[in-house]
Image (tube, rainbow over the protein chains, first blue to last red):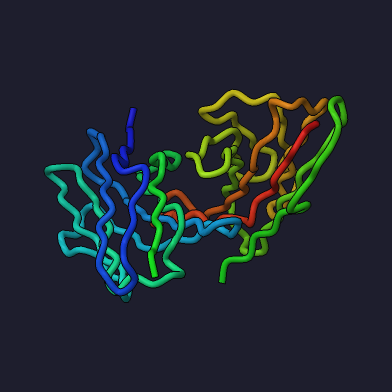
Length: 113
Length: 114
């Protein structure tokens, strides 16, 4: 069965600095999708960024980018120019064709002013 | 914009009561999901549905039940609430198996059983 691991239960970053959240996964599939979701305190879970495994180019959404290393089964999220509103739980997720999502345990990110 | 709604947002109820958590989406998505999440913790899939009249149990065993009579509606019912059911319940939906199948989440229902 596929598993998703986030080895950093908590992280903190200074406002305007850059932080990288780690995610590794285990799969025998060659075609799949990877996601980062953000869950602010007491607010709705939203999609941050998405990566298709067949694409070698790393996905980017404004200040958010990923480092996708397929051979290493690694999918880290980089947040540049961190803002106070970036403080949240971040969940890494995996999905292969026809299967349900598999979520990691989450990383709580604090942004220090 | 994804529109998925959950009511109530907060519910405090006594042991033994029957409760129904409502979830509706206006996107016409076939697939819907229920997750259970303790505050600040990981998500556990408890139920999902491929479409109307389809319901499946998820990875985490749950005493709750679900129904899918209409595409847009996926309510979750607890026949007899207990303190162990205290948690946050998140509803989600997605479009199809063949697309990138992004899940869109509702705001959640925070349930407290006294």
